[in-house]
Amino acid sequence: MGVTETAKSVILNHESGSSAEIYLYGAHVVSWKVGGKEKMFVSSKASLDGSKAIRGGIPICFPTFGPPPSEPEEYARLAQHGFARNQIWKFESTVMDRKEGVSVRFIAPSPPTDFKHNYKLSYVVTLSAHQLSTDVHIVNQETEKDKEFKFQTLLHTYLATPNSSKLKISNIDKGTTYIDKILDAKTVTSQGEDIIIDRPIDRVYHKIPSQEIHVDDGEGSGYKVRFRGFEDATIWNPTEVKGKEIADMEDKGWEKYVCVEPGYVREFKSLQPGEEFIGQQIITVL
Image 1: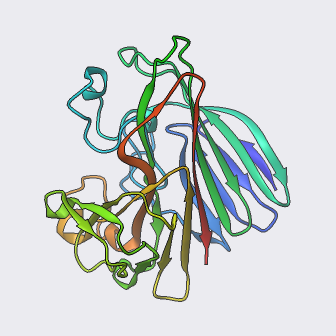
Image 2: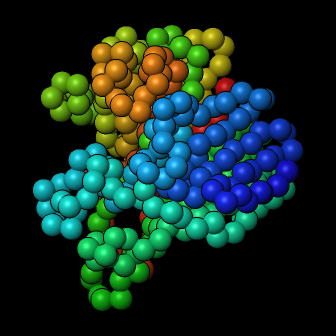
């Protein structure tokens, strides 16, 4: 068990043999191993030198998800998925180091100078034998009464899979609406059907009642992804059709993962001064 700091990352080791590595750049989980097997997909073409966001692992999207909105002005100037994944975070402390789990906390730096909002953004990663928990904490630290802070946030998790074409994704409730980005952002109502990756998938599900998504990898294993605080989730895999257009995606990389991405993205979450938002993702290996 234990926590090891290096110049670029923090490495967690649990007595079960499971491990995780979190880069300070973006507080980005780049590895999670259970039973000696890697459970996070990271493209072999990913930039790991801090020059651009890392393709794979668990990028943190904040304070926006996707393309920025047209207003307010300070949000409209942001890059896709915001700026948190491109910042150098600080390893603050070890929260827990015992047989139940190994847990660490990271703190984000101040925002860009032209994003004039006062908030605290922290991230807690907890490793146990067969689970990885990642918790986003956001506090509005404005001192002016009624000065709200609005944001979107999402964990863009790339789950490693043996063959994406064999996947079956389930447990999204019938009646849940989603935005289908492949169909020009058409709003669709789910019939509770299983999702398979036989064509490009890019769906943003809104307010999923179950708060739990199951991934069967077709080879006797998979994942259970639970979330709390987060209410929405994106399911994404570009397949070859669109995957070949991604510059930092390795050849046939789309066959090796599916993105299951809990977040709060259907609208902007608003916090009053002193209020806190906690979004938690718990991934269990099945």
